[in-house]
Amino acid sequence: MIEEGSSWVDESMVTGDSIPAEKSSGDEVIGGSINKSGYLIIKVTRVGEESFLHQVARQIEDARAMKPGILLLVDIVLKYYVTGIVTF
Image (cartoon, rainbow, N blue to C red; front, top):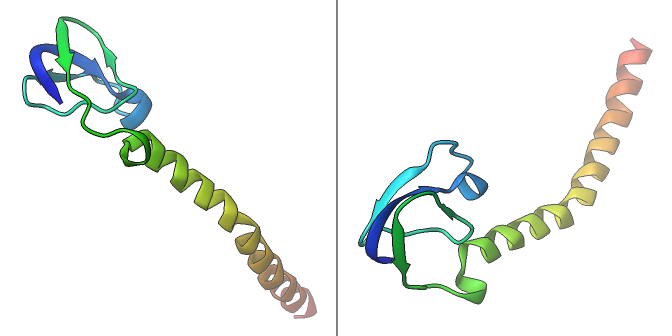
């Protein structure tokens, strides 16, 4: 949370938006953002497991854990699909 100051903040690493956003007092800033101009005094409101970056990392780990199960299902479906197509 920005307590004081204003600046253009590059959040592209987190949001993918290539255009910096103007932030000022009272706005939230995501960890990993880059201050492009001006000055900011920022108060940390979430740390550890509550932080945005930790939640993203956890979702990536969950997606990786599901991948082998999904690939197994796709292999089974393709096995029968290809066999059916070749037979006809």
